[in-house]
Picture 1: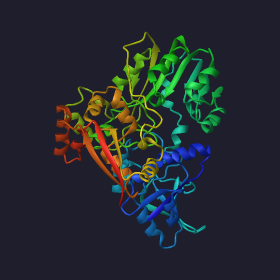
Picture 2: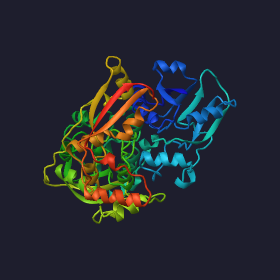
Picture 3: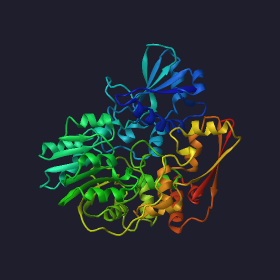
Picture 4: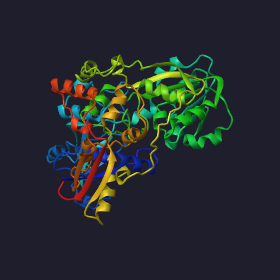
Length: 496
């Protein structure tokens, strides 16, 4: 079964939609079921497709695993099939999972109730739809067991949990990455004049109706328009982790603050139990949003983020998890607590984020994060890696690459300690290559993938104990995936 992927424009600039669709395509392929091949609309094999996967919301996580089952169900006469688990505008916090492996587990168990997922109103259009080619209009049916998670609503989250941290004397604020201005609007209502910086022009246009001023440009370019203004408050809500050089950015922002100014921040906790458990399973699957987002460049727990802020010239005054309940239960947190790896940090396992306030202070200890990533480091870093490898195979029988292993034990040890991953480890996490992910990425594409470990060695004692503890609980682990720092990957044309 071949399914042609088409991404509909969703109120955003067409270029943004195409880029988001390209980023998403690998995720949709990687969850493909046996016998299902998802191809881009421009792929020549798309002409053979009987079905078309129409994606209206590029930020949606749309695993195509149940597509064959859905297509069989559609043989009864329906010409369009929509998934369950559709979230109008994105679900609100707390999200019921933070890692792709948890999402897949929910889909496999078909247990919406276990995760507290709610039905979408009937009038809400699904972010994805499976259409029979050339069918025109016809009956539409919801397919049980086909889950979709939309991240779109994150652009409009108000982030009201940050308000209690705003200093009472703040009257003038600069919000970096203001998105649609939902949080800035809360500040405006409390008497704070907000200047927002937002590179997404569609989101910036919405924010411009809410904030005193909006500059639609990346932070690096916005400085020219801001000039020499000084602010009482700089807001960095889920921004610092995206920057190639967060320490340099902090030093620049410190210069825009009044002497008694403050930095309000929100940062992802890469030491969350689901991220650590995923690494023990050999999984570090990038998603379009969340803790393991594909455009994150820095991964850390709270001690690591405090070190980044200190190196940037700030002293943390308060740091805490948001007041959001942790949904559901799982055996993994207990394994991590009792595995002897957390040194008193077990209480931080359920924090998906850290929020807090920092003040300008003297520069702290120097911190060289290292390994800044070029736009494209290998063919696998391209937006559509499958198409790039296929292009190279036109002139060569084999393509061979050596890439960093995201789940190397050294990276796991740093996150278990709550630190900040640096150097080659930082590059590995930002690029997200794992043996599991590379094989899944090319499943159903007609390209054979071979993955071998490079420089494999014995596991550190702490990691070995965690693996043994998980095995004793009957939980899946992949110790062989943790033992190598690099992966040797070969690609050949062949059967999927």
